[in-house]
Amino acid sequence: MNCSSKLFRNLWLADGTGAPLRRAAVLVREGLVQAVEPEILGSAAAEEHHDLGGRILAPGFLDAHGHSDLSILASPEGFGRISQGVTGEIVGNCGLSAFPLTGENRDHLTELYRNYGVELDWEDFAGWQKALNARNVRLRMHALCGHNTLRAAVAGYEKKELSGTEFDRMGELLETALQQGASGLSTGLLYVPGKFADRDELLFLMKLLARAGSLYATHLRSEGRELLESLEETIELARSAGLRRVHISHFKTAGRANWHKLDRAIALLEEARAGGMELTVDRYPYTESMTQLSTILPGEWEDLDDETIERRLADPATAETLEHELAEARPADSWPTVRLVGTSAPGMAEFCGETFDRIAARCKLPPAAVAVRLLAADAAGTTAGFRGMSEENLRRIIALDYCACGSDENARPADGSLGSCHPRAFGSLPHFLRLRLDASSSIEAAVRQVTGLPAGIFRLADAGVVAPGKPADLSAFDPETIDGQADFLHPYAPASGILFTLIGGEFVYRGGSGC
Image (cartoon, rainbow, N blue to C red):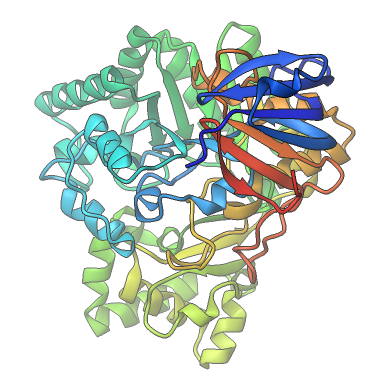
């Protein structure tokens, strides 16, 4: 560790508030920002001097929507984050969190995260935090309590209506998580078992959040065909619950047939904001999404968890039947828009990054057969990218001043040892800034979207701003060259333009700038 005092000079400061850039010198000592001055501080003020050559110093970037709950325990360095200038991440998104753990959900989550080799030997938020500390995780990890994990902790993963006792237990577990420091509750209403939640269940939890003054973040029931209905459901429930703080995860219009809905979707958001709701969104700066491959399955398979899918597909006759059902349900011209991102299925890793039509041609099998074989071997770990978003809509969404950047990915090592990934794992925050700057955003406004804005959304008092007395979590970048460099065939490529990342006054990443 290098705990020496540091003086950063010859820089433009984007302090995270959106205030205009200003020339400054920043002194860091004992892990904190000690001084921010308009002129160079005395030469004796620090043991180290770093000249930024007129480039940008900013607060450490905050990933507003990540999934590094377990991957950061498997690879504590978090290279894919720190190489983007990221110093903090909000996890527990889309209804999936590392807590609470009970006999009802522990085995399932152990199976889901089996590739990480981490023993899930805790029960609650505090236990997970203890595991982070034991592994010396430097990245600042902030977690939402995931509704899918919460529901499964009391009722498992089956489709069922909860009893009064289960409601009460779920409320107790959520209150414990909030008291221990969880930032709020997330839902993943597309996924098992969250998709089984009815209005009464969601209203019950949202009223609890309202009483606590906590945040509700949601992966909507639909981001495409029923996008507007899903937004209306969320806003109406929040109003009924008296809940002010609402956050929409990876806000998008999925599928060409739904691109035209953006005007109405934004109008719904802004009507709610005008009515006093603190409604915000996040977005990754790519037009291909990524999620479990199992989400493509038709009929009754939609309501099964991945562990059950694997078990059923162990029967060859069942697998063959599903191949036919999937081939009939999915148009042949849709397979070129689906890409294999990651899997531990034997012999299939070489196809990661390829679309299913190409994989099928190489394997001499129909695309549906390839998909079913992947799911039979690794339903829990097989992920796919889906192309179906509008570039124009993406740019409109990230231009919203209440839109933060979220990678929707895991913090991963550079060697691929935790599996392949979407390029957003290594490029989201720099590419978000590149798109904003290319659209004539000011540097200070763009920086606010990846620092001060998410800090405000999640009530992170010590993050998102460069000011005396705050932790010295800093990022430095060149606005001319900052961008993501990863793609699906080269997913671990570090971003360009990041000079360094500092957490607690210590360098955790240097981009070779010589600063």
